[in-house]
Length: 455
Ligand code: UDX
Image 1 (cartoon, rainbow, N blue to C red):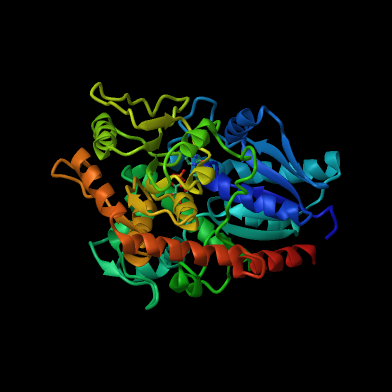
Image 2 (image 1 turned 135 degrees about the horizontal axis):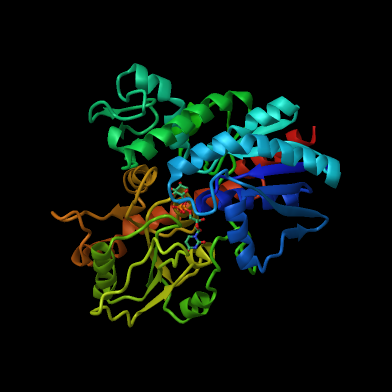
């Protein structure tokens, strides 16, 4: 490949979207592409700060250049309001993206030959089409969720959802005979409790789904090994998962928070298979009561635990530990080098919100799950982990809607005593690793993609 092949990568401004697209970018750089990684200005600043404000990563002769464009919202806008954010990006970013590509060409002498757009940013495929360059979709969530999105017109025709995407009645339905049945409760966009946000997000999804017709290349961070039915449901799909970081890397590019690496030496001191890893991704918020039950539940397990409690700059995540909390067997940190943690031999299980990246990372390291979904696709991911792959258990809420400290203790004991789950988790890990080994399906799919980029 000529070193001048330049790919513009455009993630949605969320950690669970930036991470897999950064890993994909690193794979492309290893094969000689240059990457222009475009974040929104807000996220660009977050990503630069843990990197000591260094704007690029270089591998061999190729590089990842981090650049930004505004998301169209004012400086004090609430970017946790995803309906506002997605709507603003759709209305404001296409013109700015086009200008950026033009600017790069005129001022930087850089010709972008392809845009890889996150599903939420699929409007960028219209720009690629307009200016006559290649366009590619990247789906950061499960293939089953993409299959669900592809089925929106049929779900409306069949009377399962209305034109705002909301279930008409509580119902079980099946997208195809090979995809596990779903319940209307698992439709991810309908899980968003604020109805205005829900409607806005659904509108963006519908727009993006229509745009996908502009490309033949639909990349996803999954594999038919774990999602056979959903993968065969989507003819254009090119599975390239699991996208995993190189754990030997000193620092991970693209993190919104500074990783606390001291937890690795702490893990080194714990017995093999002893530590409960507890992390809920980048968006989950706890209320005070539930946070308290979690803290006291971890105490009750009487096992070592590594718990990620984010400190968000906007103080939306302001919860404090209860006074009775002992925590003497635990280690609480602000942000973990998660893949390094999950691959550490001291880890026994993962209490997770089941974001798709956490799911893929846990599965790829053979770690059994205790599932605690928070919103959107995470409820579906839980059923996948527990009922299809059989590598985890879910928590049940009590009559007050809380997951109690006793429930946490009971489920930890049950999971760690279940030999079948441990063996299944190991099997799934082996299958996933084979996909990304040389000659494996995902690895060959990336080669196929690069060949097409070169043409
Ligand atoms: C969001 C959605 O919630 C998720 O359901 C969707 O599938 C993708 O986008 P998020 O909630 O942040 O993402 O969860 P997840 O998909 O698990 O992504 C979190 C990422 O942050 C993972 O790559 C994980 O490795 C990383 N992480 C998390 C850390 O590096 N350190 C941590 O301490 C916690």
